[in-house]
Image (cartoon, rainbow, N blue to C red):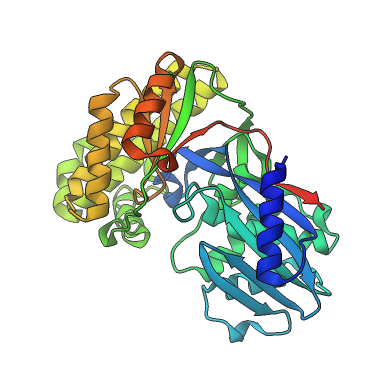
Length: 391
């Protein structure tokens, strides 16, 4: 449920932006990624959870047949419903929305005014970028009175299809399903883009979760999605396998030296990270299935070390990366008994910390003192997905 203060704030901003009151509000949870950032790029699985940090949108209709979107995280968007696809640059926000309209084949009599706000203060973190089109789709379906026409699997496939056709780099919009349904989801990236497993978790019994946000994003050219895909595909072809995860670990390590000579040490480091992620993801899935929080915690402890090793392997001394490296060292030294994960592909500057209940209060206070309150947020896994509220 959206609280009264948030409703009033959204209504005021909507009136300020568009000159009219909103007709309905959309609330969608953000999500965290436990395992699978690298894995899903090569057609494997991903384990994510919806969390108690939210995106909000206020929506009204207009007679000009124009979709207007305003957000403090995106440039303003204006798209006429009467234009054709060739009027927009491929991959642009306008083109994505037009293709979404074309794929849904829904008729909009009026245009839409959409104001989007996120609870995260520094850009779109925790998967909210993948929820951008989801919010637009929900708004279009609602005003078209066709909300029930799309099952969640169909929404995911639709958004995935639009982005795959429009974006230069591969996009896996299965990220958005946690936002649609809530809970914790394991995605099988098998081309169908639907989950093979879902487990609803209100919270961990023995642990609590904190999100620590670093303001600067880290986007490195040599960690680009395209380069990683090319390098991992080369290595996978060497084994004549469709998926690198199918390679026996002993075989992989036995061939590591020869592969390094052929493809370079960076490619091997990335491929090994990918292989280990798949291995850990399967174990994490089984641990959640058995409510074995201790094993899940230990897997995070192991995978954080791989994150650190991969980051150190590249030795890039940008200010953003140094900030992350220093944060990692401080966390290791100050809190040796917590598990944390660098969240998001490319080390985007978010940490997810899983903290034992007995040390939670002290840990949270020390984190707030070190990083200021705006950068530290208490979160929990939420079962509720995207919701629409009439005004």
